[in-house]
Image (cartoon, rainbow, N blue to C red; front, side, top):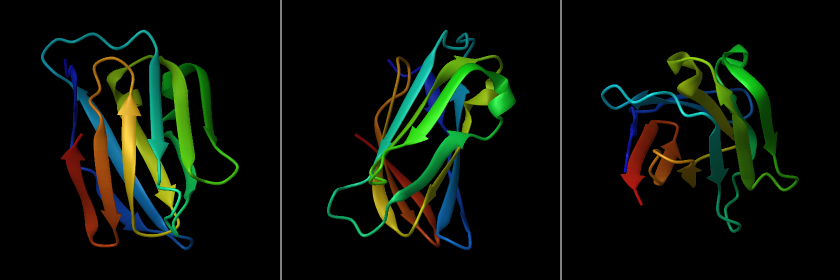
Length: 124
């Protein structure tokens, strides 16, 4: 069941690639998750890689971990969000790519089609 809705992402070109900002909004009076996990993957055959994935407001988390795997194919965020503003994230990729986004309970799986012109979202 989807208890956190993905709002339309924005894309901003950077010196080294594309930064996607995306945010989840609680549906109704859904409480914040006790712990949040977010995993982003890019295909192994893609020329683009993940440069970083992190919460937009890192101070909104307790026990925060965020990392990008050595090959740039996998990004992970885990932590305990303290308020709803903590549900906004920044993903930086080196170029246009279709990335899959999977989250912990309440967050549906999505495909983000990232390009310099924007980001379209397809539910998986």
